Length: 268
Image (cartoon, rainbow, N blue to C red; front, side):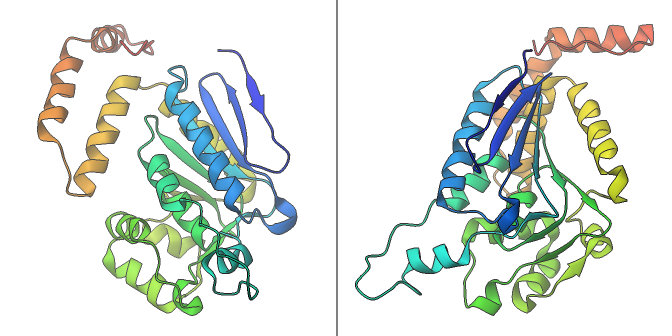
């Protein structure tokens, strides 16, 4: 697969090479704080990755010392009318919840490379990924209750089914800052590594994910997401299982197992 790199100023960038799509938040001067145009751009990127059958894994990361400081609170206040100057009409907020659901539901497995701490709405952006690898010096903070904001329902659902209601209550209702080891303990992080080991750990995980049978991974990811939400389509999941029994990938996987070699899957 040919390498492709799309950079649009300080909007999130997309680079695709060797079956891996890397999405980068690249506004480090403001700690990768997100605005409406970033949400729009991320949704465009996710739609592009969803269509590209050659992509096996997506990696989401940021530039600088913080993964993201979350959504721009000034813009949030202005668009919601909370701090808009008198006489200025409210502007609609971008559909951030829809974007996180699209990331969670993406066809391919997703890895969040937490290059630093994560705050506000960016905590849900990272949680929408299947795996989160963080530096040992990172932290997280969800300030919704301190701001007087009732968080959007999609995020509350995701936090509850991925972290459990006790962890979600603690973080949402107390606005407590927690460190990397606690993030690992509650399941927010998949792995905690020394800063110098971050790239190697992420690269190894990406290689492992890329080596699996893509159709099987896609189908099981969908079923696991549905199970977590109590929305499992049993018939569709069973049909994906039956289809895998007749797939070229299963035959290749079995041959490779017997021949003690790495399988070469084609997604068929």
